[in-house]
Image (cartoon, helix red, strand yellow):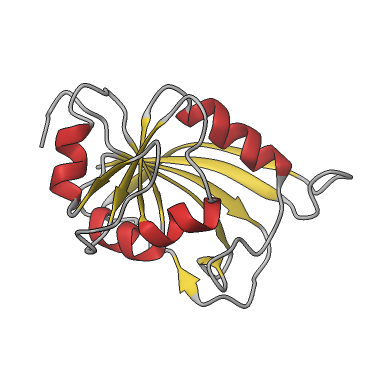
Length: 165
């Protein structure tokens, strides 16, 4: 791994670590989407194939790197690789590549990440994919911003950053 990089996992997770259901988000939080865009613009975003297919297209002003086991998979405007190691090689000149999901990719990479950029959605949801447990023996919370539900954001939420101890 490149020691000059800060590998950051970015995710929105519910109280029960829910991420999504049926390959889609369960909630709609415009504030989180705005933060995601602002944070990841200009960077490599590393994701699994299912996450890419749920988004449906490359996101503007970011380099989309898709990890898949399918050697024939193609996605216009994206870089397709077959391992996280290859994804990092592709992103070697990006000081802050972001891992954006899904659950399998988070599970495989949480032990390698330097930082977690989490939106905590203050609600529990029925889900079929979950974020791995954030082990407080490994991760130190470095910042937290709390927001109440409002007319645009149906649920209360917090923006929380962690760094590896």
